[in-house]
Image 1 (cartoon, rainbow, N blue to C red):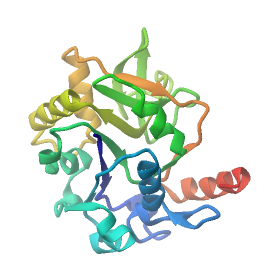
Image 2 (tube, rainbow, N blue to C red):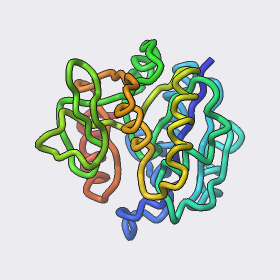
Image 3 (cartoon, rainbow, N blue to C red):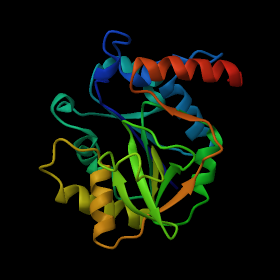
Length: 235
């Protein structure tokens, strides 16, 4: 049994003026589904039973999309923190295996299925086909992730973390331990806890989806590009 946690508390300030709802409510593609509906469908089609959504900004609007199909935790302090604190707020869920997903991404369903086949305690989904600005980048050595974060220079990175990760029963407890060590860190993504794990010698595996479609939507430029890509791919 594996659950899912979708981090959907953020304001999405870089889209302000273009889209004034939570980013997970952006509608895309020929079926005009929200990002949240697409992720829900991907998870359900991959036999994920329990889907937990951590809300913040305009949480009632988020609830209206899936209603009782999912479980919700409302994180009120979303304005002053980043998603490390969002995930830490849901620490009571971090006792069993789960998939953690950013809410502002669109991706192919088969990525989830591929991730579920990985048996390591901690596994990240990365893409080595490109290195992007404004994202969580990774450095890989001897088939291991040796650093992760936006501090890594584009010229030094080997790929991007796309915002999806899997934690086993053991991995979830390790994650909680390192999130608690960062309990006073209000500015970072939860990848900071992953970085501290790596420094301490914890092995973090990955799957590489360099041939698959995915996109993180942070800006209006991202949104325009994604719409064009999906029209070309007819999805």
